[in-house]
Length: 197
Image (cartoon, helix red, strand yellow):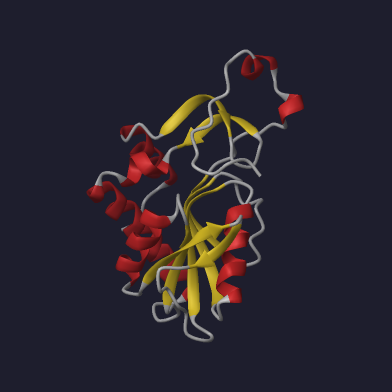
């Protein structure tokens, strides 16, 4: 099931997940656009459609039998990672932050050399994704590709592995001391789950 860029964004719009305003991102940057993937994934049929299309792109790029597991960073990637594992018929697990560092907990283990897809909801700077990749490496796995529903870096984020996205966006982000006047005039909202780094 192929989805166009516009179809993907329409799914976000219909879910009320493409937000406009003044948002403080986990990275500490500010943006006039926020993608609330939890709203997209809360409707199972919509999440299934999006992840099926993403899984098909992953298979086309890395191969049908190239993966042993999916690992996603908590919190945002948990549901996307689960659905990607389901679509790809491989186990899905997630990494959690313990004292600021991702770890596999809850009995999750990777076989030595396990070929892993790191699955995210949205990639902005790629920091959480790179930290999740490092966690997989530290646990004996090998990330061969990463995936996300939306790459809001428009291909600029370097994860150290190929990134397969369902849609790319070029969304402006600003340092706190370089806000345009129209953004500075709005109160900043922090919609994410992680404290600023």
